[in-house]
Image (cartoon, rainbow, N blue to C red; front, side, top):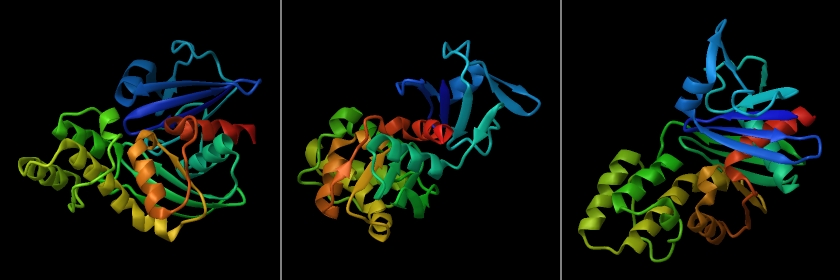
Length: 251
């Protein structure tokens, strides 16, 4: 059994790949995972896989937001973008595509040709195009993420490029009396407007969309309509990095 771990800013994702090719996926709150399932041994984080009920993996490969600050004992550490590229290839079977990964606190766009990373753009300085931004905006509108992800028609124009000021702007639009559907559509369009420059620079004939934000159906529709290329969402977009770590272990 191979184990891939994606140490995310919000969640730790674990993928277990059995010899028959079957995948088992687990997700844990990041802080709770470190507190309850790990301990520091000689400056390294040791995870008790048996206590997690995950068995004892033959090989562990790790990546993610926390890979540079958390030295996982017994694991091979690989760059986050590499893991996500390998995960996207493993899940879709594609070799040529633009990878769009939107996570809890950062966004990445990667140009992939013949199964290799050619170029990439990242934004980890601002949360305005990430899952945390969407969660905050859904809270302002008093709707859940599932409902937010259903609106893309007749969007209210939102222009703030800052997650904090964006909330203030959205509240102003609420006061103006716009319907929730248009406000939510406007929120989804702001995500697209912030990632569009990165997509334009590295656009191919297909976009593979991963990360937790890939569950936002409205954003998928917006990207397809605006960029005029198909958007492929793998079966497990939120676990893509962990799956990529397993793919790396496979060689």
